[in-house]
Length: 471
Image (cartoon, rainbow, N blue to C red; front, side):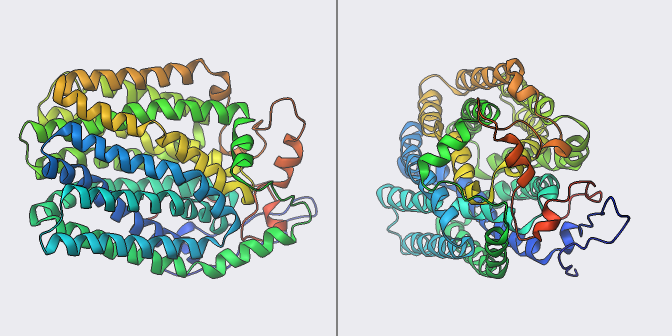
């Protein structure tokens, strides 16, 4: 691939200038970011698939495995907001390097302990908690860095491309995790360590882009620094009616969907299915994500973001309910594929809208608030999934989580704040401003800052060139 410089503004006429944006695949900074993020996500995909099965193998009880997994999830949540604040006041490239390196050291140590045969439930739980603490503190940096390497008008397409990438990782991650677990815990954890290290290496290549973005933001005469601290990030998000409603819906839908997926993993293993079979069923989520990603960009450009989000929520809630109808592997795989086909457009649309309206020096904290709200109820979901499978069985537990997803869907459809979110062309001019204030005009006129030229940032007369999903 070739690299392109910052977009140029050829003279068209005296009244308008055409903003020329190179395709994402031609932007070196975006490619480096993509490699760093992909390496970290592949490591996380394998680890997330392996950890509940390793805990279940060491404890022999879904309830105990769910409780131990919940301890790790709680640890991550505890540092998520602090991590977002850190990403807003520290060079994000350095944070990516430090986070990847720590992840490689921790998982490599666990792999070594497993190889010498002394990995027990207590040691694995301690290592898991440390890794989750690392994730909470450093994971916001990678997402925040995207705003520094991609022009604001390309954020929707970048998010859609990322969804396609995530689909491929989900499609291959679970079966690969099952195969690695068949070889043992040590090879699985060593694989994770290698890709954590790769994420740190690619994160280091982003240092010039991060420095350039900081200089651009500082030189913008219209730039007004946001208040510092965790509480200011919470106030910024929750003072805006649309974002506030999105965040509360996220709690319910993430609890419902992730709880249902965890129930499937525990339930299938508890009834004697092999790790490879569970991996194949989980891979069907990747099939759905991949198919959905093919249409994500087309849908985002043509359907209002609010309506698209509600349609995605409806698909998810109905599918979660259908999982309980039949316990055969083919049925579970089919429904998972149908459910997750709606996720790429949903994630890219809402995530792109969120990124587009957040100021650069608030993006770390805003992303951490989103992550916090998505994860805050997950420890409860892990415990309920484990106890539910052990005491009530897989099907009743799936119904419980499906009802939570349905509540999220009803909240979305009945909320005017969510339904009224416009498409990408109007994201920067939408009314995501604090209630009872008049700051929307000032904020939307300024627009989010990134590493692009400030004059180009304020040019909004032309949509970017049509893109597809670049992997």
